[in-house]
Image 1 (cartoon, rainbow, N blue to C red):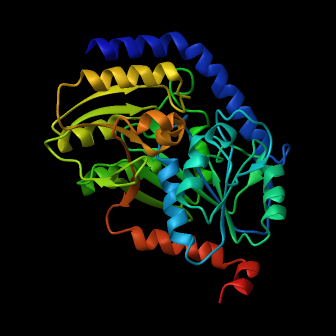
Image 2 (spheres, rainbow, N blue to C red):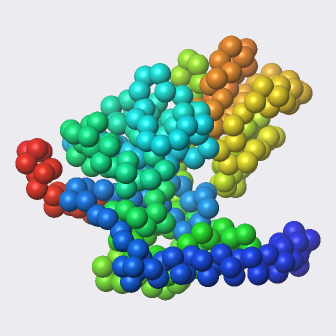
Image 3 (spheres, rainbow, N blue to C red):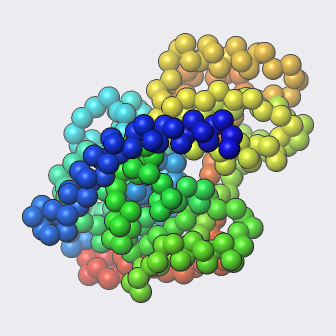
Length: 362
């Protein structure tokens, strides 16, 4: 057993009593909702929830963007997020002056990439949904970002994501692990997606995962890998093909950077990294550290590379970005086993069951 595994196992043992208390709380809360002692409210309106059972790193933002790209040509799309680590409270609808500090990094990412989409935040989704529909009555569908465990609101279609390298059935409850909801809650999802799979995932491995998921007849299970787009300059938006002649300083504050590291191992000449906590709010001292690390790289062909989520928190250093080449790397899910059209059909068919949408869309 490696030293890291030994430390992790010791940590789990120490934190097990706290995890047991967390499990009991989550179990009791879900029982109250399942028995309708606590009430969930639904809407006669297309609401799609993208969520997970763990704390993060499952690929929710890329899936939300995939849904936007799928639906935007036909429907008026709105997104509603909590707005994690923002400096504001309550319901807020993004506008041209909005910053990441006001709505959070992931909603800001949606707002910048999809200017025709209505992007809103609100901790209490049950309150925020009516406000969003009042402000944007032309909305045809709302995508709830990270709301699967938010039981007061009942979405019409729940998409549950779980990562290939740490699926929910092998995880532990917080703080010993990353689970923040009961494993049995997966039964509430209409769609389950195993994300961040190897591109060459074998059929026998897929069957093992399907056995663990043990989906009902009403549930649909999909497998997706990661597809990286072309890196682009934060200022000029000019694209840069990553190649084996390039030295990279990776700057990221995401829950699970492992797939990104694997991608860089196979794509660029070398890389070093500065990592921050998920949703980290960058300071001027952080930027000076990044700048120093970049200048220490002895190469004539070097860049700083970051994620799109981190990029929306770095653009505030605009005056400095002109001096150093810094690029963002887009990411999107890639459906395996030729299941993309099946997934797309499930999404559009769900929306099509609502009369309001049918009356508006020819």
